[in-house]
Image (cartoon, rainbow, N blue to C red; front, side, top):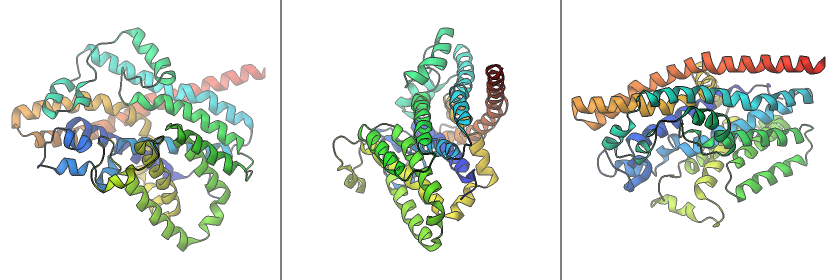
Length: 394
């Protein structure tokens, strides 16, 4: 049996959050690299449109990396539940899940609330230079304190698609619901009954049939079950693992690069022939996320790369980076683009400098947010849970 903490999973989570940052920067400042010929180009004719439906898009396709992020959550939850000693640990984890996700979101939303009232967002002027509708349509109106509390505590988690304080919050309701679904599915399979394999496959097919992001969480639980129940037997065939792992990762690369911003008109047209019920974007990216996880698991060298300290650092701050990067892109990055354009008149130079300066700032702010907000929130939640447990026991 493998060690109870699979370290490369943390590294992959960090890589996913970083690639989501790249995706959003491209959407804001190189829209044709996302929307293809429909977007405003800034490089040589056709370069961005070709990029938007190329294999290179694998690294900046945000929908894919959101699927990876969700699948990892399902995998980690299930793997932890499978190793829990008793039901008390499960109930504690369930109780802590909402506040652990919500409190950092509330803190970030409070910062954005202040920034809105201080007029610190420059995405309007920047969008006129970049031609990105996505960059233009957000942070246009000031919000109230009621909006801050209701959106952060209720709307974001129950209604979903709440984007008052970050348009990256659209998936948090699914992350919240998917987490609880993963806990329930994993709890059902704690005894490693072989019939649970069919239950998990059934759950995947059920959610897939309605194009739900919850498919990612079910896939994560299924992957954790396979690793836990069949892992040693599979890993005993080292050469086969290498060959299959390479094939699986190649398939993940191809499916994961399926374009999002427009319908493909190149070789990817072959993949468009799915049943009408299935959304090809969701389907191929969910499939790619699952293949990526299993491919890395089969290839030890790749797992070692994702276990390097710099990559694990990204994993540690991944949730914070996901939260802080949108306000930075819409404020600092946008302001830098406008300032550099006024001085140089060269769009690509200005956008490049904006990205090079903004990225380390994002990482630093994510580290600060993790260090002083996310960790302290976790400590507060743990202390509160411990006190509640003491009161109940007495």
